[in-house]
Amino acid sequence: MAPPWVQELHFPHLHIPITIDRMVPVMPSGPAPTAPGQSLYLSNLDDVVGARVFTPTVYFYASDNWRPVMKTLRDALASVLVPYYPLSGRLRETNNGKLEVFFGQDQGALMVEAHSEMSLSDLGDLKVPNPAWSPLIFRFPNEEPYKVLDMPLVIAQVTLFSCGGFSLGLRICHCIVDGLGAMQFLSSWAATAKAGTLITNPKPCWDRDFFRPRDPPLVKFPHIEFMRIEDGSSLTMSLWQTKAVQKCYRISREFQAWLKTLAQSEDDMSNITCSTFDAMAAHIWRSWVKALDVKPLNYELRLTFSVNARQKLKIPPLKEGFYGNVVCLACVISTVRKLVYGRLPDTARLVREARLGISEEYLRSTVDYVEVDRPRRLEFGGKLTITQWTRFSIYDSADFGWGRPMYAGPIDLTPTPQVCVFLPEAEADPSGTMLVCICLPESATKSFTDLLSLAENGEQSAS
Image (cartoon, rainbow, N blue to C red; front, side, top):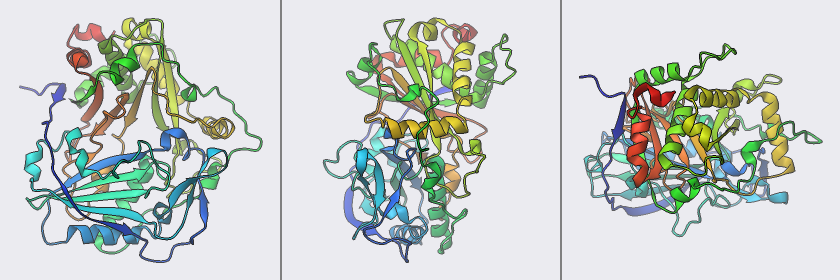
């Protein structure tokens, strides 16, 4: 019997007791081109309010027991922090609330060594992200949400398990790297640990001046992605007032291809093909809104997602090895009524238009918009944000010498329940399968599963 096209994945509810053994600051192992008292400019793409977060990820490995885990990772991190020296600094606010990297005494990254009496086999299926793994990612006691000022910019917790395996829980400040930049840093750290000597390919490039605002700033677009939302719908209340639960689904390549066919409108005269992302994003947004039974029907909701703009930059092109933020936030607006009663191809077309609307000029306009009117808070009202990790080589980037991780990626979306993540499958040959993680109230999960699977009305559900 063939496996289902959409498979709901389950994870155990468990408690992972850990003991923190020591906390070690990690300084660059050699001279870096900076000194205490100096600072570095951050671009407005680095400093946009949505980047003022740490991105938490976890990686699981079966140890071979012949290499000391903590020393290997610590020594490699110290080596990599020489070319990636900005990650050894701290963030502070300057005029108008803008951030910069500054360097002082006794900074560096932070490594935490911990152990657990449990074995990796006690954690359940390591291919399904589980919020119960949160103790494997270090947070300071009483740490405020979204705190980035005066924090180590790389925080790594190594947890040794009784079976000899270990996890690496990693938090990297999004102000310094975007997703591709994080993969570049992680790949260099892993290759250095594996080889025992510094490897940087490509050579890291800071060059945040590339995205200096124009003088005077020239904002050419309305930038609805930053507009303040007075949420008049039931969506946000239903997610935040009733504790949302995290659900994960394995989506086969065959289902993605079929959905893409359904999402391609026959009366679309643009001759531009609907992408897999367009179809998946539109379908998940519609299914989520239907399952949540959002009211009122005339209320406008927003879907946002990041678009990598590296290939859009032509004159001049971005230098190889640049690891800062080069993403723009694309935004789609639709009423509840159109999402619930409209057609999948119409929503997919809106997603595609927003994605293709990100250009070099749009990116420059974003930089100038933030310079003129710096957003001060994250806007969650009436919104779903989709984060796409399927194009990151996270598994291949994270071989520190113990092979590919058994799992690599985020673990807990519930602190920000209006975020949905597309993840690559853990298998070395995933055949295009993806994992979708999303949050809903428990009462809406069955409806969402049926809608996502197109189980309620067959093909009619996508029309």
